[in-house]
Each structure stands twice: as C-alpha cells, then as structure tokens.
Image (cartoon, rainbow, N blue to C red):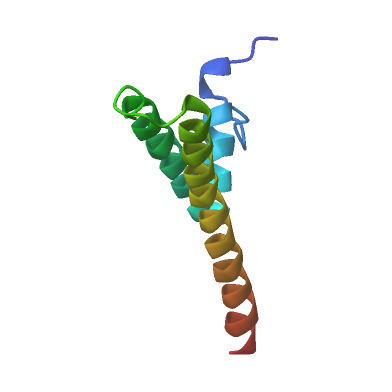
Length: 92
C-alpha cells in the first residue's frame, strides 16, 4: 500500500518559528520587549568605548537596568492589555 506523503499537511506545525508566532499573537508586547532589550544592549555595547571616566562595571549596570526596564515594561503593558481585554470584552 503506497501513501502519497506530498499531499499530507500537518494540522499544527511545531517548529520554533511557528511556536514563536503563536506566542506573539497571544501577547504581542513580549516580542516588542525583546526587541527593546536587544536595541538597548546593542547601544550599550556601542557606547562602551566612549564611556569616558565611568567605570566599566557602572556602565554595564546602567545598560542592564535599561534593558530590563524595556522587557519588564513591555510585559507589564501586555498583562494590563490582556486583563483589560478579558474583563471589558466579557462584560459586553
């Protein structure tokens, strides 16, 4: 018995990319927070040479705090949006 596998389409693909897209649809601000984290980290590394008399440890701490603030802020906004959507859309 031969089966034609070229016509077979899985119901849900479970690759990393599709899982990430599904999670991004459920909470869209988390990828925005990750992008903000990457931008702040890249800017911090770029400014590393021109930090002047500031100690490296202080510069890295400032960069880490700014990057964490982007992620925490995006996650918080996502949670507030989700709570708002669940609470007020269910009342209608």
